[in-house]
Length: 338
Image (cartoon, rainbow, N blue to C red):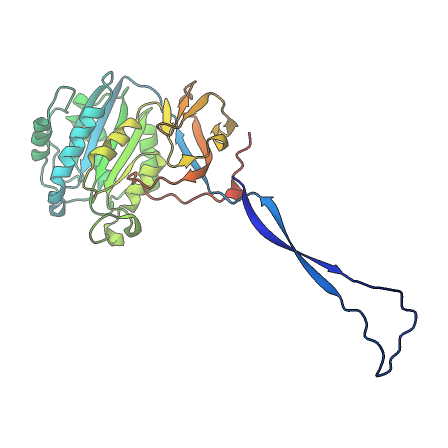
């Protein structure tokens, strides 16, 4: 990791052949000896500048059951996304852990229409069952996902017959417009954070223009800023609604509700610079595998511990990870020393 730079060292050497005790200021006086400058090139080893990246997550707890609700914008502009929607639901059904008792329900992102009284999807159900559930959603053009999920879990009579308050909970918001609930973002976050012992969130929405893969980047009024803020708070996945494949990202979102036994690094590190911290303290029980660019935990971090993995970047991985772009952390602000 060393680079070489040429440094110029100027050395002034005054060459005098004898001492001069008197100086003749006459026109014919002999000239004084001139100074001669010798330029000398020296190779010096210096440390190069490197970018430091920090991956992080908060460890989730293990659970035996999870209730999942997809809150879907049913306005007319969303009809073009039905194929991707069904593929995403199917991907989630297939990627949920086999030892977890899960239930998956779809509702609309509004409150003026009664939600369908269809029992949630469970293990053994098929993509056709998911299509049937989607087709039974009432027509509701409202884009108020926060109000919809809160009202549904608290007041819907049918919801009380299947929701399990000792299970974890995942809400997936799907909309091509900004969230328009009466409840403020911070108030929703405060309520949802206390709703279950394990509360998770993901959003499939329009992201900001610079990060969008849409043919025509969405305007600010069509961008899901409020969904992004809430989802980021809960450490969930944010998926661009214009992605041609929601399935991969939905699988990633599903994986994030299981405890981390290992972690795929965003970029390729100089292996000897990796440092792991748990709640700010150096964490030693891990090892790195170059073959799949993952950090494996020899001892799994406990529930709710915030884990940070810092490293100097040797090679960037530019594969889209379906998340909002993260800024690089300046080198001078990170100390990787234990």
